[in-house]
Length: 321
Ligand SMILES: NC(=O)c1ccc[n+]([C@@H]2O[C@H](COP(=O)([O-])OP(=O)(O)OC[C@H]3O[C@@H](n4cnc5c(N)ncnc54)[C@H](OP(=O)(O)O)[C@@H]3O)[C@@H](O)[C@H]2O)c1
Image (cartoon, rainbow, N blue to C red; front, side, top):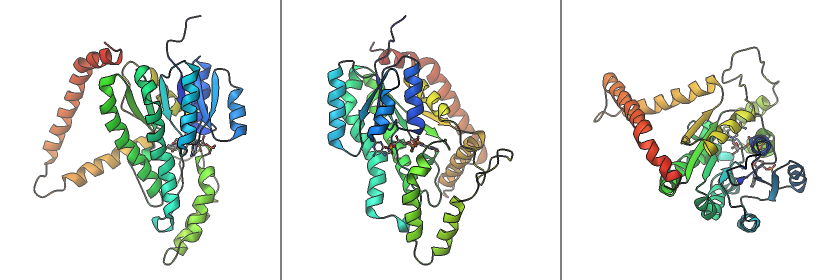
């Protein structure tokens, strides 16, 4: 049997959903996976998977992160990949989010990513490895009730781009995967907090909050009608795992991986075009339609040129040459 050329991969939040699917698929391919969870029963379940080493980790706890780091360091296998997957959801009108709730969602989705990445960075630099952040299409879009969650995912977009620029010269690549709706425990885990916030809604929002809560109890939508805002079709976590595997192992990983249904992809592209048109709606420096198309063409050819010339150099750097 050929030896696996890659070092281990650390995945945060592997008890369920995307992280769990990713951990088992990487382990099945023969990779050593450090899969983190918070609850003892999840740790025990993860330990049963061949090639998975379960590690207790709450990303809000600097002590647990340090313990996880010391354990992995003492194992002596190094570290090739870090997948910052652990995340918390939650909906509600801004007026109903307490300071503590607001801090907590940022603590998990943003500060936790920063803490874990910084702690393991020296091992990733040694391994000339990869960092993959699980963002969301909510890092590009937002809408009412999704404010705080999408704020954290917008923050992760900026974090990924800036960190990638910092680490590329050192041979470490950073990517962000942006899923749409995915079958997981995210909604169920966040339901209690979400309902508490809608119950807290004060005048003049009580009626609206009652309607929002009623909508959570509606029957699941039909598979037979086309996807729309009211008829969402969550995808399998496998499509996210597939994008993460590409970000981890392809010679030239992409910076962004948009994953989900076609309807979701169209929604993201249309939102980006709307944003472009908003920015262009500037009386002093506005481009005409033809000029905008020329700008788009120029970006497309610059991208092609980069792909054919700049990439081999980047690859040499990634390989330490
Ligand atoms: N599902 C979607 O539709 C969707 C869409 C876009 C992006 N995402 C992102 O995908 C990632 C994975 O979520 P999922 O959908 O797979 O949901 P999930 O099934 O709820 O999984 C979330 C994971 O994060 C862990 N976690 C939560 N808080 C944590 C903390 N403080 N410290 C460490 N681990 C913590 C959970 O552990 P416990 O079991 O202990 O709570 C669980 O393992 C998240 O970043 C989420 O924002 C999901």
